[in-house]
Length: 439
Picture: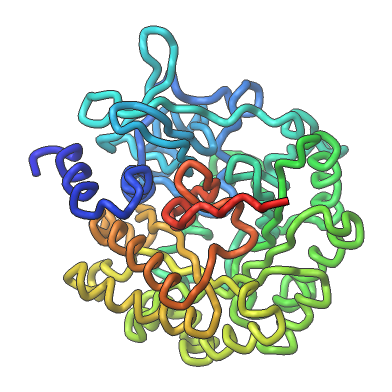
């Protein structure tokens, strides 16, 4: 193609039904973006909301490799608008890559823009520092450390267990850097609490509730690493569930409560429901049977792919199919050494998984794979999956939803280009906007 611009424009022309905003968003998510010093934040002391590293690094380098971006964090997310492609408002999670052909920088007037191949292609907006980030807990911890918000403030992300008990090469998911991210932040001397105290979480939520007067924060997600034994004497359902119980008792109905956990047995899932959780995310990661075994060895060993899928279907009987939303990591289907060699094969496999779940009324969602360099798949595949795969996945995803008469899942904010706030993939940007409710 000769340039990244030519590749992107070719895909926009070949797949006109995929919003042009989603094409750029997927390319930024899969390959990252570089930041000029003029576009970095002043961490928690400035006017821009900084990147919180809420669970994974989502970067294409370790902290020491990011240069000034490791000292002055980039913004949590950026918004793209305008430019020669007349982009509608598009929220993109920041994944730093100093070698990316995309760069965010200020022009001579101090206005931030996104540049590709040296040409300004969009105006860039950055999230303002929320008032609740300016207030600390009684023990001095920051709200950003305990209860960061993402998706332009829509979602409170509560990573209450910062490591995973699937540990080492024979158990860790091969694309996941949760354990390394914990280690690098501790090594850098940053505050990065391993197990968050439930009272600290409640105190942080109290601050958010008090200062979020516009009620922008609409949902919370409870998540963290897999628990194969116990944490603080609790098994996985009870550990994550007891946070939900405390939150719902203190703030009944204030937020949509979501839990990301393993696919657990029916009785454990019922405990989540009893604790007040509204949406359950038992992530299945990758559809293909062989790739699941190769890339999710701990999950295969402790649960197994077939049992994982059975538990997902069982959980729909407890939560209702619409409220069971398993995630997969879009792109690892094509990761060497075991992944599919062609986009056609990868899309066929992933679509098979979408049809399996959507035929049962369950709507999966996906995160665009970021090949973090400390993971086995990141090391072997530094450029991730081809952009064409991600664009065709958006097309297949929307078509499969239409085939089964499904609409956008709850707890993700509004769908549609120009409306979506979900920032770690473009699936919500690529769905039709909802018709306004008639009164």
